Image (cartoon, rainbow, N blue to C red; front, side, top):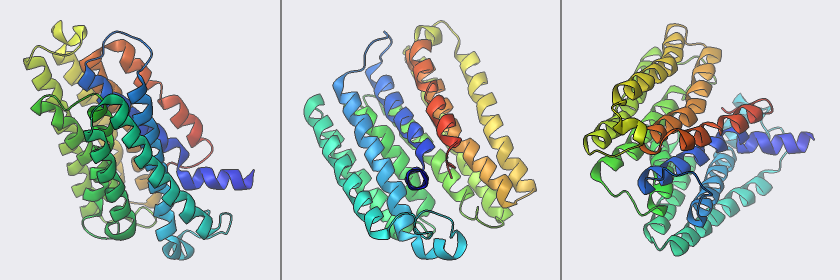
Amino acid sequence: MAHLLAWLRLLRLPNHATAVADVLAGFLIVSQTRGFGWPPLPLWLAIAASLCFYAAGMVLNDVFDVDIDRRERPERPLPSGLIALGTAARVGNGLLALGGVFACATAFVSSHPAVALVGAALTAAIWIYDRRAKATALGPAVMGSCRSLNWLLGMTAAGGPTAQYEWLLPIGMGLYVAGITLFARDEAGRSRTGTLVMATLVMLAGLLTAAAHTHFLADAGGGSTWLRAGQSASWFLLWGVLGASILLRNVLAIVDPTNSRVQVAVGNAIMSIITLDAVLVLAACGEQWAVVVLALLAPFLLGRRLVSPT
C-alpha cells in the first residue's frame, strides 16, 4: 500500500482531472457540441494523450529535482527511496512517448494532422520545463504553454481553432496556469510578496483573456441557447464571482506569505481549473456538458484525500 501511495504522490493523481477537463472543454467548444451523447473516439484518444503527457510531466519533474528534494523534501517518493530513481525515469519517458503515440492516433482517426503537431510541441515543452526551464525566469511561461497546448489537443481533435477568438481560450488558461506556477515558486519556504503579487496579476490577466472568448462568441451570435437568450451578463457575473473567489486566496497569502497559506491558494487555484473549464463550456455548449466537465471535481476531491495536488 505504501508503494502504491508513493506512485500516486509521484503522479499527483488529483491533478489529472484538470488535464481531462481542458481537453474535454476544448473539443466541446470547437465542435459546438450541444446535444448530449457519447463522446466520439478522437476525444477519447486526445484525453488518453493528455493523461500520458501530464503523468510524464509529473514523474520527470521529480526525477530531475531529486537532488533538491533530498535537501528540502526528503519525504517525497524518490528521495525517500520508496520508488527507485531509474524506475521513475523509465516510466516518465515511456509515458511521454505513449502520449505522442496517442496524439498521432488522434490525428489519424480525426483526420486532423494538427493534433500530432500539438503532441510533438507538448512533448518538447514538458521536457524543456522539467529539464531546463523550471528554475529559470522562463519556467512559469513554459508551464503555461503546456496548459495551452493541452487545451489545443482537444481543440485540434475537433478541427479547430475555427475562429480567431477561440485562440483566447488556450492563451487565457495558459496565462492563468503560468500565474499559478509563479505563485508556487517558493511554496516550500516563505514566498516573496512581490512575486506573489505579480503571479496574481498574471492569473487575473488569464481570467480576463479567457472571458473575452465568451464576449466575442456572444457578439458572433454563437454559443449555447442559454447564452443566445441574452444571459451573457449572468455568465460574466458568474465568471467574476468565481475569479474573485480564486484570487481572494491569493490575497490572503500575500498578506501572510507562509508556506501553508501559499499552498492552500495554489491547491485551490489548481482545483478551480475544472470549474473554470465548466463555466466556459456552459457559455458555448449549455448546461448538460458543463455539468459533465464539473463532475471531474469528484475524482479531484477524492484523489486529494489520498495525496496532495501540489
